[in-house]
Image 1 (cartoon, helix red, strand yellow):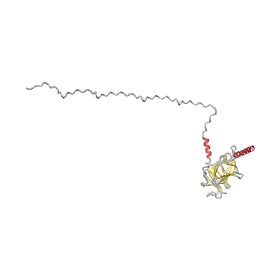
Image 2 (cartoon, rainbow, N blue to C red):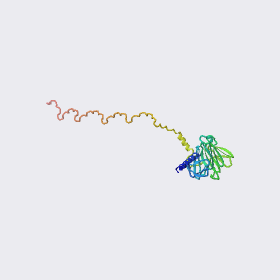
Image 3 (cartoon, helix red, strand yellow):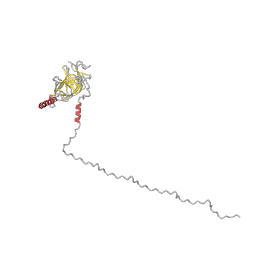
Image 4 (cartoon, one colour):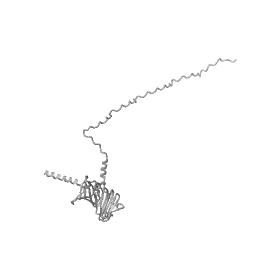
Length: 300
């Protein structure tokens, strides 16, 4: 009994590992109603970490948004009421000549930045299909919107393409049109592609829970550009001798401070004359003893 349980658990783990190893794309962020219709017809609720493989269709509801990351580094964000089916996908780092990515935009719209497929090896390895056009992609970022049965308000039915960076090429049986960065193209059913004078409003703003395209790559690039930390010394390795540090406890001798309590001697003040010892005054003649007169003479 224990052996059977162990074997079943091992088989489940191997199945999970195989699924993860063969995943072509992974749902990384979502908001609102999102589901994945598998190639066998089963429909699974969309969850963070859910895998998407060839033959699967990613579906968003009326208020749903989802971000999907492909193994080649490409990123795709779907707007509400959208359906994207992965028709072909092959990517191996060591075999660029075998790269291949084809998807069908059945309805709705997306914003995408391409990965390595289409940038190496076969430059025509990446393409998208809509009911009215085929789009060849060679390393770019663009918005797409597919309108059918008047489901885009004032926008006429057909395929709209707005290139943000890089370039694409759109074509059908009626003609081919290259579209460069900053340009907007429109492809109606059974009509040659044409350039529009301005963007009619095919872009969209995902909620904050859906990160901007290429944000992860920018963070990774910033981390790669940061200087690497110094390697830690091996265990048991001799550490380089550190220069001797001066003894902080031994402070240099301070010069002796003069004794503040011993005031310098004040110079002696000259003695002041005593009030009782005034210099002798010359003797004044006595007023009661007039000076003696000469001999008195009588007048006869």
